Length: 83
Image 1: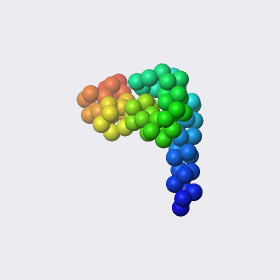
Image 2 (image 1 turned 60 degrees about the vertical axis):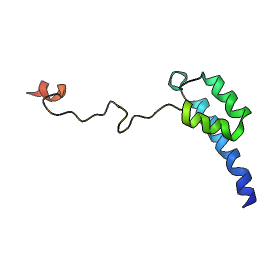
Image 3 (image 1 turned 180 degrees about the vertical axis):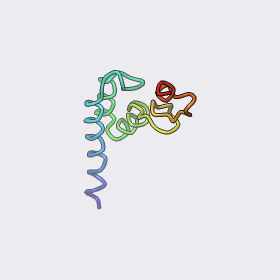
């Protein structure tokens, strides 16, 4: 149990670092990519948590205005073209 408590923050930090390094520069929010990498490394578990809350790109989903909205037929341009 003690080993798990020691390894869990390290594994989470490494995962966050790899995720940040692999993300497109234009998708990262609030700081430049190098800034988030530096924060993740210097402030080990807290920096990784901050990246997931404030820096990671938002994924399109319900309530976020994603491009996959359901449109009624009279507002759907694809449906209207088929008429």
